[in-house]
Amino acid sequence: MIGRHGAEDWVRRYIAAWTSNQPADIDALFTSDAIYRPTPFSDGWNGRAAIRDEWLARRDEPDTWTFEWELIAVDGDVGVVQARTMYRDPAHEYSNIWVVRFDEDGRCREFTEWWVERGQPDPGQPA
Image (cartoon, rainbow, N blue to C red; front, top):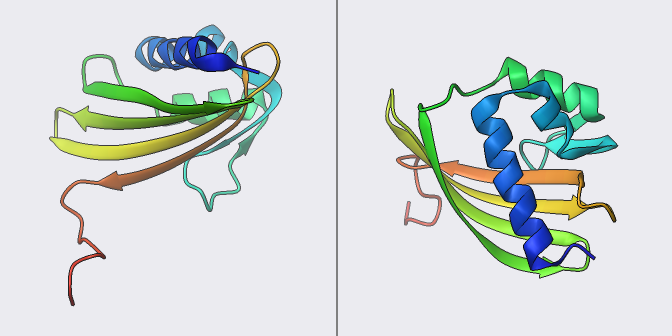
């Protein structure tokens, strides 16, 4: 069971790895057989090495983004994060939901992200 403290610590370490883009920081977040799905319908990146390589291929440079987040649920080995990512140049913003499954040591074994970019057509609006 990860608990609120463990899930929050993992998110803080994720942000630190996002900032540093250091392979060791990224690797420390995930189990060796983790799956990282950048969208819910993605086959994802399978295994720590693939996650690291794909992360670094798409990396964001420090000071080009800000990230606000809240842990909205923890149940057993699952944490749910609601967040907002804002990029500076060009300016754009995303709303994010992460579902993170943890192992007994607090590493991620499965990560799935849902994201929506601000300014995109709202499918909830009348046609």
